[in-house]
Image 1 (spheres, rainbow, N blue to C red):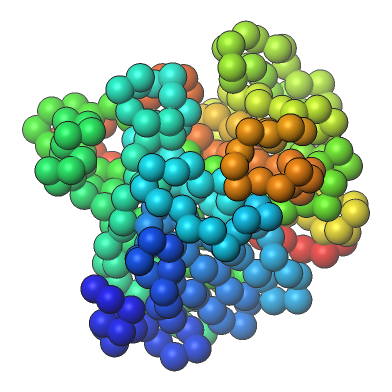
Image 2 (tube, rainbow, N blue to C red):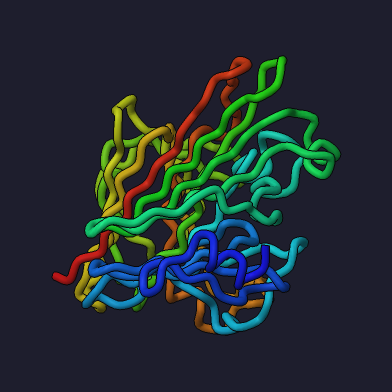
Length: 301
């Protein structure tokens, strides 16, 4: 559907508005009294989240107005990593999977006084079967309440077991990476992502004074809570996740080769990434589902 058709069928003036986006595909803006969020249908990337009275929570690089296309990496917002996180689960799949390179369909929208929501979807077809020989249905709900709420549900629609992994890759906007603290990791086992070497149990809160790429193996709780404390912006970003056995803390560091970054962009973000599994995946029997959720809230200190 084009923008006019999407607005006619799924839009609501002042609450759900579709607009021209990247590479000829629409974006959608969700709004209510609590804030706004903008999502690209290309890759289902949440590009922006602005709680009322707080300002932008998500990082976008200096060249934020340049288009990204199917073959390009996305280094902003909240990319969706599916059906693998990273590249250790399957060498046949692209880095972080292929969902972030495909166009999601709109399955529905709704709003109340307290919530504005869109449901997006991606299902197996001839194109995905060439990349990955499995039948699936992937559904992604994004809503704005007092928080930004993300729910990514994988369903095995085939007749054989389906193995996969998934994750959210949020780029949180900060004033200075070297001055922020990530809470919620104390006492968790840490692994270096690049070489899978054990780094031991985290003895204190995480302070990112170097370029981190660390995977934390989380204890078996129903939900996992983290916070990014940013004294320079005088605010805290809280993240509550379920369906994840790992969380990754990452920043590219100075001198990044990313073509869309300006020279100082590395200082302006930190990624705290809920991940279902790493480096291995999990298996769904035919008909089974798995949901990865994250709720993001930003408050001024």
